[in-house]
Each structure stands twice: as structure tokens, then as C-alpha cells.
Image (cartoon, rainbow over all chains, first blue to last red):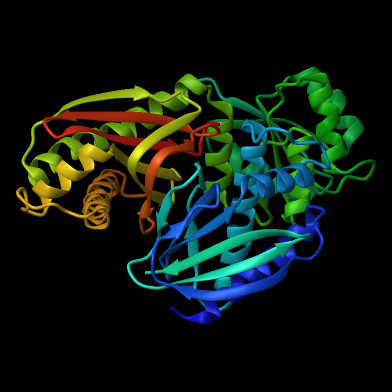
Length: 152
Length: 286
């Protein structure tokens, strides 16, 4: 798993999130993992294929998801993680991955991305790779969003 | 067949001519062109087009403001934004104003036609197109593959999945579909079925498999099944290339996978090992 693949995804966050009213996200932590990931509560999987094949997971707590949805909806209070809030998180995942795809294309690695799949649950495991994958924690105005990136 | 009427809102004569040229060759017809927002509002009321293509920069207002005005007259107005820029903030604002799709200039002919086609079809039409052209292929492939992989006969049911969520207690393998139509396939089953399925698949019917081995086996099988379905579709429709992304597999209890915003189908194969389900969700026709 090549660490230089982190940048297109991190750059996507840094570019896209401020456009939606967030402070510029900061990279909090980066590591390589080899086991399944534990969902933090809300996990969105977006797959990609073509020159590069893999998956990215946007993994966050429900609190963080509600904070993001609220900010995206111009500060509208989000008490429940309802249909509208879920839709905002899916839309965000789609926009981030589309932007990352543009960045990857600029590096000569063209990819097409799939529809995001948003899963909710208290304690479930996600597997996106048979060996290692990269985990990047991004600080989004005090909220942590975890990105898991795997290329097969 | 009656032509589908499209109105163009664009202040550039060249853009109008290019769009008209693309559309008039097909089952669409350009019924009017407006050069600015005021003209658009007037013309929309007069023509009641099936859909509108909207430029971002207009002399008297931007395309988002113009869309807002059209939606005020007709809350069902179907609007496609065609602009040079296509960033996140534009999409956010545009969606709020009721714009359905966003295309980037220079617009590709196929992309424009597909977008308008889906937008102008009613939901029933889209469901039947997806079911006949794509989903039924997966039904056949699922039945055949289950027989070839684990030697079971199955009774297969197909229905439109209107539920807000897929409830998963066990394993779900999510495989993205790219190209056209874009979407995702999810193969899922409960814990007991996963254990039995993987024991048979791995030829270890007497052994106690651990959960990781079992879910890996299901993942492999799902990848084969969805891959076969997609290659069969590509064989039938030579002009459209669908591809699959690598699988993402989730395991656990009481997981909900959001199913709204997609046109989804549920295929249930009842077998002696338990129910093996497949959800096919397409981004078209939301």
C-alpha cells in the first residue's frame, strides 16, 4: 500500500470541506493497519476502479456525522441522524471521492467511483483489504473523521 | 413517438446552437431558448417544457437564481445545470434551488442525453427499464452461480426494495458498479446462513470455521456472482461498459445500510442453506 496515495484523499478534504462552510481540516494522525476496521457508528464506503482499484471508507461517530450534516445544511440543527442528514453525509462522501478521483487522474491514475453506501450500527466490522490499508484521521473543527484507504 | 421538449437557458449563441444540434438529432426537441432569467421565466410559463438546461452565467441573474424562479412557478421543474465550474459549493447551492443534475462544459453528448432521458422518464418507466435490462440478468446469474458454487437449488424472488434500510445481521458484501448504470450491489445473509454457506463452499462441512474465514468465503462468492452479472450485461449491451469495484465487507449485528435516494431491487434466493439476498441499487431515477 503506497503512502503517496493518501495525498489525493487528504487534498480532497482540504479543498472540498471549506467550500461547504467548514474550517480547513487538519491531518491528525496517519497509520497503516492490516485488520478489519471497526465502524465508529456511521461508515460510508465508496469504491473505485479503472487504473487503480480500491475502496475508501469515511468513518465517523454519529455525533460527528450530525455535526457535518448540520454544517452542510447551513447550520440547521440536526437532532436526529435522519434521512436528510444521511443524505448529506452520502453527498459529502461522493463529492470528496470525486475530488480525490480528479487528484488521482492528475497523477496519471484515472478512476471511476461508485455510489456511496452508508451503513449505521453500534459495533460492526468493515473489511476493505486483504492485507494492509491506510488510516488517516482528519480533524474537522474538533470532530474526527477517519479515512480508511485501500487499493487492491 | 412524440418528441420530448427541452428549453435551453443560455446567453451564448454558440452554446445554444451546439446544444440544439445535439438534441435535435434525437428524440428530444428544443422548444425554446431564453437568453436571460427574465426571458426564461416568461418562456417556461408559455412552453411548459419537459426539462430545462441552465447555464450558470446569465446577464440578469445567475443560473441558480433563475432555477429558483422556475421552481417557484413549477415546483416539479426539471433542471440540468451546464457550467464551466462544477465545484462542491455550486452543487450544494444548486441542489437547494432544485437543480437535479450538474454537467460540466464542454458537455459530452452521451452524458447529456442520458441525464435528460432519466430526468424525463417517470419513476415507473425507469424501474421497468432497470428491471428488464439489468436486474433480471442478475436474477439468472444468482440462481446459476449458487448452483455452481455451493450446489444448491434456489427459489428466487425479485421485488422493488422500497425500504429505507437494509437490515443486516450477519454479513454484507458491498460492490460498487461504475459506468452506466451506476450503483452498487450488496450480497447479504444472516450469520447462520453465512456459516453454512462457507462450510459448503470451502468443502469443510464438518469443521468449525471462524467468522473471518466464513465472511471471506462469502466475499469471494459475492465478487464472483456480481462479476458474472456485470460481464453478462456488458455482453448484451456492447456500447455500455459496466465495471465493478473491489468488495467492501461488513460484519456484525443490527447494521442498517441506507437504501434511500436509489432505485433499488431486492433479489432473495431461498435455499436449503438459508436466504441469500442481493440488493441492487441504481443512482438513476432518484
